[in-house]
Image (cartoon, rainbow, N blue to C red):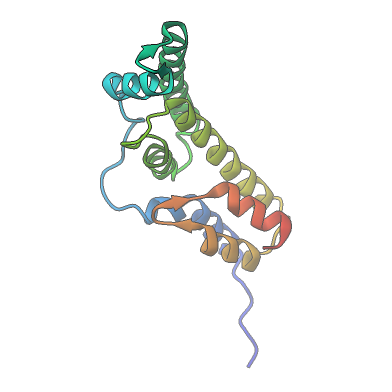
Length: 164
């Protein structure tokens, strides 16, 4: 039996899938911004990193705290930059859960992860709009790498480029 021809809006439908894939996997309220900087957790991480035999390297501790604050500010700026990406809240949640843990608190890495995933999302959307990849290729990579707890757009981009 012959398959029906694809409707012209099918590509648009898949593009919407790209835009909503991670968001749909995360029920609940939107974050509206990255989590607030927890000074106590940031200080604990910096103190642990820069204390040796009971002596804290004060200069490196201050540097570490500056990086924590700059990381938070950058994460907030990146959140605004990527606010048009429907899955930005899922990306921020993923980055926060990955880098703001009980064992370590690294806000500079939250910012890095937001930027990495945001740029990868934009690359995938651009390449898809340019018809660089077929619908089945995009669907397969999204199905493989976009999960409820890990919206890994960098891996979707890698999957598309390398056919894996």
